[in-house]
Length: 287
Image (cartoon, rainbow, N blue to C red):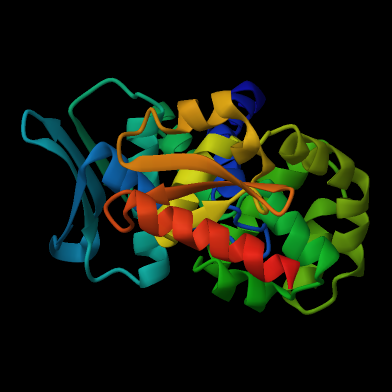
């Protein structure tokens, strides 16, 4: 089981951590929906609610010629729906074999269902996010649960799995620490994080930003960026690589003994408008 946990959670972190870095989302402001919505767009996934008697079927994934569809029980609490949707995404990202996946109340022990549950838990509550909120900001149990839109049960199991993995499955302090934390006593859980925080942080720090991706993401929200924020825009080869995307223009202007690299969205600014904005920035900086 430890090998499965390690493999699946590493794959989940390999999805979430680069997304956080490349969208400049801090661990304290992370919410699964940013990553989840990006996946829906990238993989053209459709979402639809369903309802079955006794809510026995929590979620469904259908993969066919029409595309990918996730379905969730509409009468479940929102926090359960969140877990279900990330669970269904797990089937797809983990490349489970099959075209139909059914998450039922009584089939969670199946290997692929357990893997999808692990994936969902990490996407909803990444290691670095829990560390940042609990160990560094000292958030209480309810605030973490509310901020991440998860249930008390999901957060409890996630903390159990986290500490059992980094410490040991039979560590005697894990369960009491979580019980105390749920009762607004955090000294024991802080002690556990003291043992593991370096490993979690190093894993997160090892993920490098992709500046090209960051600039493209930034241009989705802002029409214009410069080398003041991204010094790489002063480099000719970097600008050429960026302009491999036909929707993006990039150039550099020289004035007052200064150089300013810049990039813009062609559907929002003309080349002349972008150049004028760059020249204005240099002029204002000289005043």
